[in-house]
Image: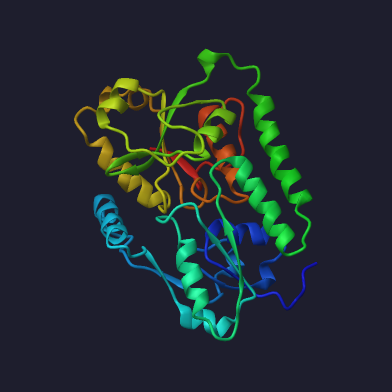
Length: 308
């Protein structure tokens, strides 16, 4: 077990969940404003705040993000006074996406101003599933905690999904569009195409390991997916339903095969698909349940996903 003198501030939700899975919850002394799982970390001091209004419309959020990035400002601020008080020995952050969480550069700048501590920075940079496993192992190694059991369990659950869909023919693998943002329309990439394929679908529009691309509406209509899954970054089930409903009001929405056949779904993208940590396997199981309810029944329906 790790030394009780270890004081960790986690500035990324996926990192917090990795620490928790490795049994390090008691060592977490501070968190980001977005770290909300597991529930027992919610009483830890918050070390970041957003410079934008997450209740604004999707297009407004998108424009605010672009404005901030263009003026060389980050989207998030680090509360260095709180960090100073907490005197962490380690800070877990990420270098994957400046829109998802504080950037590594911001953390390095903040740490340089600290007087009473010089914490070690552990920066995660996941783009594909393999990277998420590697991050779990790396965090385990950094705190001298064995990650083998955690990883074996996660990988075993992935294998179960793979084995259960092996008998399906190509015509039984639906074409799937995963929507990460609605205005502008963007499709989810990085590890999401992998999850779709592992869950028995054919991922459309994007490349595993690449950033999420924008999608012209005409392209969505032309490719006419069998299944559409909404998983907007940072939004829970209720907010996702609102966003999806805005898109369904378009005059040509009903031309889509997925809309006609009732195969449009909303998910809690904030808790699951957009968090590269242990619950990425829950995300795979959610997709499996959506795509092949005749094979998979994990019980996520109603809390993690719903038909639109």
